[in-house]
Length: 291
Image (cartoon, rainbow, N blue to C red; front, side, top):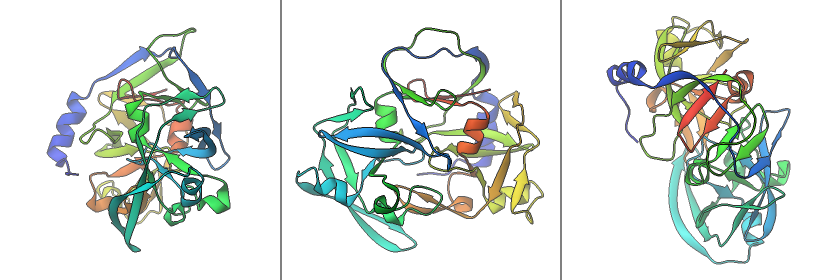
């Protein structure tokens, strides 16, 4: 993963496609999701016919199931590799997926492999251990992008299928994602006049800023920063009691922990922002739509 220099980021701010457009619900299949009081998106999924509760996490590059859920599949595992975090080296396995179905109407999704991991290492800002929360796995950006999912935070739905559908949507601002690896959903934005790169992450219930970014905003002593202005390209987004927490370290499901100031991202647009602005995360067109 390579860092985009700030000069390039400014160019992207000027060049990113933003427009006010009419967003209509997608056609095809739709799955209702549950958004919890902790602002987690949960959905029932079936892996090889076995049902479990999954968290939808656009910030996770890979999808995961917990150890206990994997044991119930009764399929052989293959060694997947290692990742590293502050807790040291972590090994993960992969299992072959013959079927992956979402929702009560069992929408089939294309996916061949899924990672097996102890979800307990994910910190409190995400789902905790499966034994404590009843979350059996994470649906990450790999499955969402591969299946061209559309996550509608206002309607509490995930839609699949070709564009189109019934009914008129609301007038929204459209922003193109910057995807350098094909499994990440990030945008360029100006927060209080300062440009940066932000990952759109449904796995976080709050929005985050790195200390370095807060310093550039002349707010380095603040723990929580009130947002007075948000810009995507040449368009402003109306502020709706938005605020961002300053932190140097965030958890990501496929790497453990990431230092925000040293990573490609200056911050995270979490579920508080996405819900406030009735966001639609379109993995088909690789776009973010916000009110």
